[in-house]
Figure 1 (cartoon, rainbow, N blue to C red):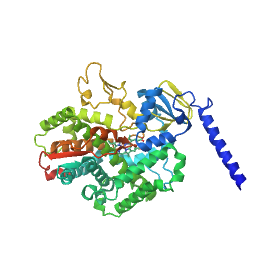
Figure 2: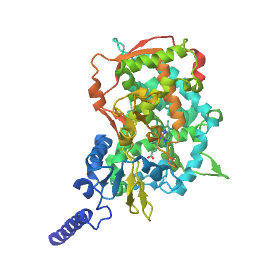
Figure 3: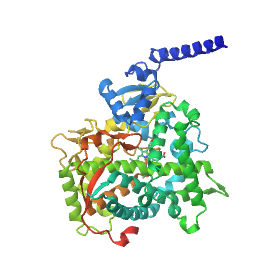
Figure 4: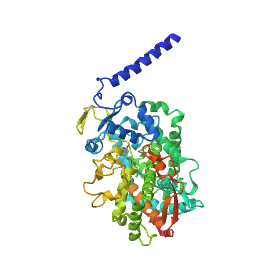
Length: 499
Ligand code: HEM
């Protein structure tokens, strides 16, 4: 027994050593690409950086040290090149999703996790009509109704000094909107009214973190699915399944044009998606549609309040455009406002710090920018690095300057390459909710600025807050965005709720 255990141990050690030697050797197809030794050997360090929420910073640091192309894993390259974006993500030959999208032990399949282009495109055709222009008015009602509620909640949650955790209120607002948009009138999601005593938002973030970390070592997923580390993911998926069942049993008048009504389509008499598929897809709808917009909006308010010149410029433009601050808002009118538009674009640049969405090179390999990359390799263009690259944004790429998007930019020689903003990604796997997200973020930003004067709470430390603003596929915050909110105008008219 002891002898056979020793033999097994020796075999394992030999296998590990051989793998390490091979990954470092000139026989490995990625041998000629620079990168730290640890990353050439294993993805575990990347997994750790994902866990800490600093992966985008780490990848950027590697590019500064090693150049435009870096070996970030045994079989993975990061390519910090604007010209590689279209080849990897958006051209007609865009690459397929990488192994990191494996959603191991789940019984159903979901749009986001589908790696085959053909299967993904079939599922995307089911989802897409929900986000078509013709259906947006339905979703718009949820935005306006919930924003109306948010204005009340901000006031109600202020303590005696007028301090409120704005980031938390925004998180509850996006979650409730996604409940409405996904499950219609039968939605059981009410965080603005009831708070989040069950920790749904935190569980969602932990599930996303677990998915991202395990995505670095996808082979482990099927095993870890049955361990406590993925418990949150399983619990949330089960919860989404119960919400979906409630939605299916709801009265007919409550089933109008929500995302569920598109996912529940039938092929003849047979549903196109199984209940297991519906669980995965509806959970993803809530997660994708709530966490990321909430994070981007939270960072937007941070940038706004931090710089009084920016705040004054935006508030003045909005006050001039809407002398009666309680009037209904619509995207057409807001689209005419130059400074608002510059502010939104700059917020997407610094507010969505993704590390790069992994794709797989085709069997025959591909030329990416000036490099030939062999087939079957994971490649990504790091969004955050592109967003702060001096070739795209100059000067002061790390500073929040809406002015860079206005005529004249930041002076002679300044650059602002809008096409380099990768916040919603591009191509066949790009964000389906982009237009909806832009609308909800813009409406709430404008409504809050018109309704409240905001400043940081007395004890708020802006540097610590920003240092704790991390990213695990979605922005996450170590510290609360505590602000003092002083009412400027009355609650918008009742009609506002439904516009
Ligand atoms: C500021 C807010 C948002 C940002 C920055 C954002 C960003 C993204 C990105 C980068 C992807 C692609 C990820 C990848 O390839 O791995 C994505 C996918 C997706 N997003 Fe968003 N998103 C936002 C809001 C929303 C909202 C509000 C919804 C729904 C209402 C939504 C629905 C989706 C869907 C369904 C996909 C999957 C598309 C597919 O695989 O075909 N997103 N999003």
